Length: 384
Image 1 (cartoon, rainbow, N blue to C red):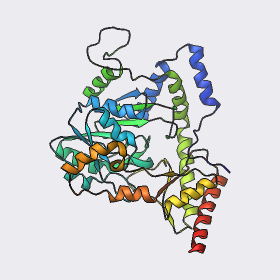
Image 2: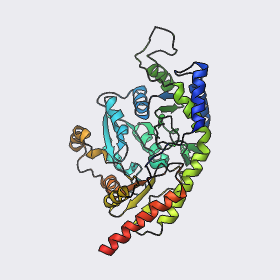
Image 3: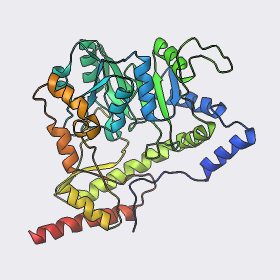
Image 4: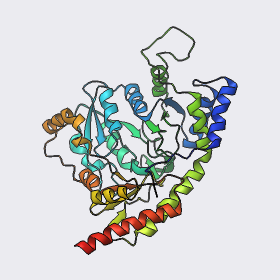
């Protein structure tokens, strides 16, 4: 049995929607893109939404729209995908890495206090593995230090946070990505819904929205004019991508149901294996599993064994502070923030295993994976 890490849930429905782009002779960003934006604004409850070519560039656009510039610092979790930090570098600023918790590897705001300097302009909470960050803590911290909030919600499309308090007086359920000054999403092939590639920015701020209009459309509000009041670029997508996205939005309830079924099935079957446990989902967050994420004894040996059985596992994120590409930033980090440790992000990488969780994963495939994990530990216990 061959079981890949990801398998996009696409079929003839997406094909038929793309075909209509040819029939209508509209292939660039157009009516399907506009319809997708309208539906997403309704789903997420936001005032404004804009496309970007991918999630990395949506983060970059937010940073530019917020005026983040050379010499500024942005607090970024040490445990995240490379793009969270590289987008900060792309904007000319310095990513300052902060520790995460060990329950589910979300940013640990209590460990951010010692990282704040006069150069710190923003914090970037990253909603990891289909769960929400504790946004109450992030908002209080950002307000205390006068920081902008840039949410990286690439792995948390439609995830809810159920205990948000405005000024500690009002409770509201809101979606990940909608709490800060702006939020970023990704529609890459492994995301909850996909366009193959694609990113999205959401905001409720009028000034940020206007800045984004200029930035993503060659420094002008509307196309068709050759007068450019501001510096801007081309960050548009195509209606081919939006066509796929529209069908994916229709499939979203089914995708969520299947991902929860898969998580619950793994949870039941893996509960019989003492050497592994699923990471914790906190009560304030809904959960749309991005991967089946486990902490496992002898994680790298387990992944090597599973690979030989035709199962494609994946490690947790390699800590940002250890990335060879960020060596220069870490020299800066050590100079300004002495004796700062990243024990939890290191622990996650050394002990975490991502198992498949794509929507079409079948029950017999889950059984196969769990039986192979059980075989691995039984074999190791016999040897020891």
